[in-house]
Image 1 (cartoon, helix red, strand yellow):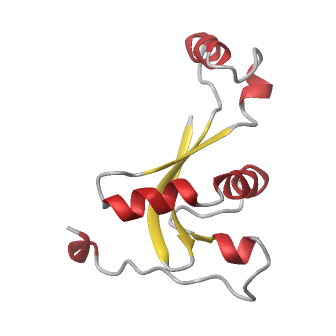
Image 2: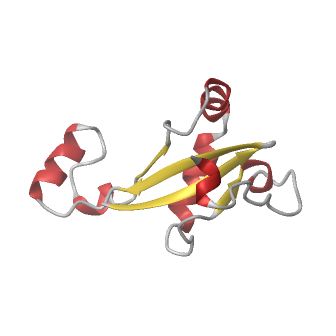
Length: 115
């Protein structure tokens, strides 16, 4: 498995997210991914990316916004661009949809400000 953290942005709502590419490391992971519906071969399983909000940071309104984000669009973008995306990248939903000419910037500054 390979994980990267991203900041998803949808019209001013910024949500820390984790994306995990399902590349199994052994037979046990292949079996578990197959049982979860991700295909029965390691090659097939490696094409999946699991994308979820990091809930400890989120307030109730942000959790609702994260659920409302176009996660499928973000997931497809992650899947197709995994290799070139740096961890910590801002994924702007409106930009990915072609609704903005430039992606939004991170709202998170100094990590101490997030605690």
